[in-house]
Image (cartoon, rainbow over all chains, first blue to last red; front, side):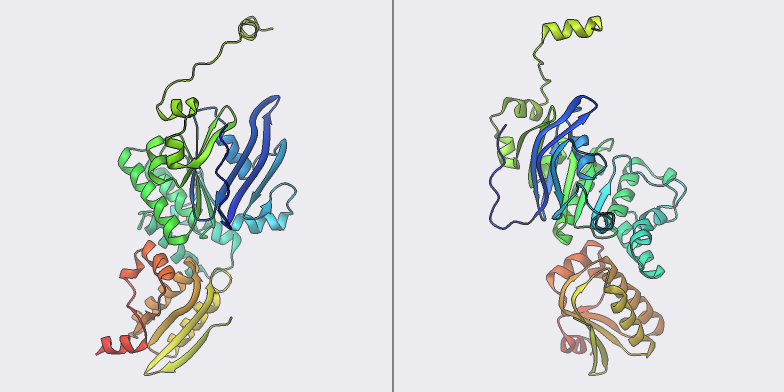
Length: 271
Length: 110
């Protein structure tokens, strides 16, 4: 594995992961993950299917317990965090899930307003204006009365993004923004992610397997493979990496797995 | 750092300072609406604002809408680059009358 480049001076870290190990049952899915994300950067986590990127995201969101290691978000240790501190932390973090995760029984506007209703005591009129502003930002102005079922795939992702950013989070997680979208809509979302970073100084972690999108928006890229980090560095350094597996992924070459004959035979015979 | 207001050259000027965020935007909103309820033409001075979030901007939007309904003048002055970026994100830089300071606004009023 290539080691991440040394931290520059006093760059504020919004995510610090140290020696993270995680299992699904007996199967090790993350193995010795060390990762840092700096304030105001777009950090792409990429890798093929089964690389561990979605598992890593779930751990960063505190949705799964880690086997060992530590995770710190916005300076707060996740493991053993008190309930009140966790609530405060979540106010500063936005998440846009892959499928959108909009509540189907609520209008788009109600979905976007939900975090404000849950976490703030703002006036009704302020919340409504904030929700409409964020819908304008994601180019869904005028769609607040639509139901989620009436939206296309791209619109659903944008509505989910509007909800994720309605509280102006310091840290935004975006899971597979480009999946299932046509190239134009995908490029529009990329543009929006860049604008959020620049206008709001938001730190954004994007989990994706879309290379084109990753290279278009990334400040730094972490490449995962088989639950380990192959490289975590700037776009240029990832592109020019001499690691053959990194180059395989960048050039979309399938992995040639080494065959363990005994293990293979045992699998086939069910022993 | 609390917000202030003054009356100068025919305008009520609301001075927002420091962070105008989820915690403090209700205070900013109340002050803006209060001035407008007194039928004052209103400028909001953002020159001392370190950070303004969407809830702060929403208070400005609500104030502008109310001023329009009441036939009062409204505008922003001393808008920092950081605040302008937040306004630009929702294209509100094209909506609000924005001037460098009170005198520039008055000159523009003719």
